[in-house]
Image: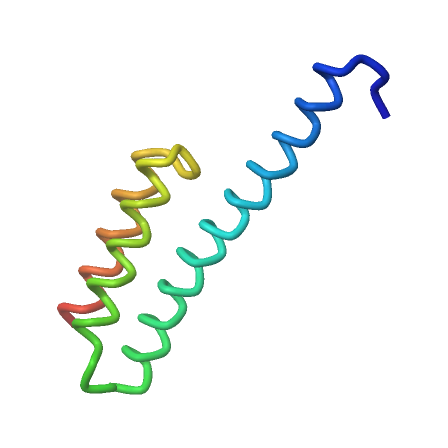
Length: 84
């Protein structure tokens, strides 16, 4: 544990940011999995799940949690899967 006050504050800030980033990434992964499960089960709300998943990916990319190329790759794969 740090002794200097600014370092103590930095540790608290980093823990908060880590929790927020982890939650955001988890939301993104969950949305993608829900889309995959809906597509596999031939559900009638597949397009809505696709939109939610793309939105979650865009949000994660805008916050710097994933890189732009990964976001584009994931969206492209989902679009191809939706079109099948």
